[in-house]
Length: 587
Image 1 (cartoon, rainbow, N blue to C red):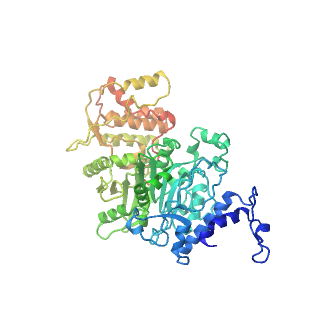
Image 2: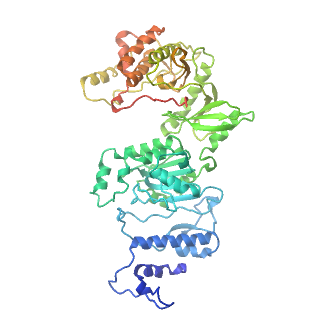
Image 3: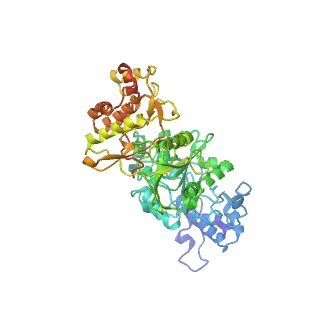
């Protein structure tokens, strides 16, 4: 079938029954003669699928030069390529396709009736000669987080969105299966890069439910408060360790901000993540990218950055330079914990273990230069302190001048976090004694004054007079106090132990990014709160006595101490929040 005859081919597909076309008769017998009101033998969606297959078949022929390039403008409206990056111009095999010339306006069963046609603006050729193939799915909102069959030729990420992903061909089915149904696993990590645009995620209960008219079962599931939090898609995104870019419109009347933040947190858990903000755009980013070539190009370039190292090219080059002496990284694994940052354990070829802290979340990336510069200086200070087993400082790129994100490299410490009930009294005594030693550090230059972590305007509390009184207390000005060196985030999740029984001992205190100067009660109360949440109120209330029994000084008037105690309370603890139960540096 010649490309220029696709219009006639549409008529043949719509009305061409066996009787009309004469496919069972000798050549030249059949005719297609639909009269007024004739009944179609194929539905529009089926015709559109066939057309798509024909276009892709001809595109392949153009790419391998079995079909002349002049066929391209017969299939697509073709624009000039002056907007494209230089390396993507003058690619005869594909041109710069805007949209197909022949389309069938089909009413979709899953709610696409009112949706605009899918823009076909992504250039698929000329980008993959030296990198994994790029698969594109643009803004098809009728999919609404649904799973494509595993046999599909292009993968669909587990979200409703415009998506761009780069992967090896053999890996596509594996990723599709893991993203939609199976648990995240090592085999589900072939994706080098992933781009999402204003995505939604849905509970698995909604996958096989039709959209209907907006008042059916699907809408009921969607309207159930926080049903999206059950979406397996979040776990699949959390398992992704390659490049990830999330495009976020300035105004989105479709996707709640809480969903966007959950997707961001999932991607920031392991991936080399970047948030791509478009302040003037609205939800349908596929249409926005179609009309804004500069943003389109920046987004695609961001997704395809550093594919050779799954997005971590700059960071890995910086780490290699810091090692020196011909040493190299033999093994790397992501560590558990690390709510504010990604923590990785690097094992070198000489057996040395290091820990790499990387700030990826936008908030912490913004504050990363100050946080990592402070931690680097504190680690250097503590290297000469007896009785405080802190990591050794190796290198830092706080402003991310050389790395993909703000990064700190330090030594790994032995031991693990203990939050079980065994040896609990012994562990709490060791924690109290360790905190006394931390407060005894006298630096040549004081760290910054402490910062309050809550305020009356920000607290969230249940109803009741006791909580109201607690909120009133923190409205008071801080009382006078005798300051000391604070860890500021001292709790069982940031302390490593080895041994059992009489051999139990502390081998590491980690996470020094919030080090401050202030009243000791802040550290004592913070750790007490964590102990109360982990082991019960009695252990939290008892911790101050243990602290003082090991030499901790009372540096605040007793009548004013409650201000610092209440300032350290987690006012959202009643929502189920608990301290980190595994330390990132513990493995």
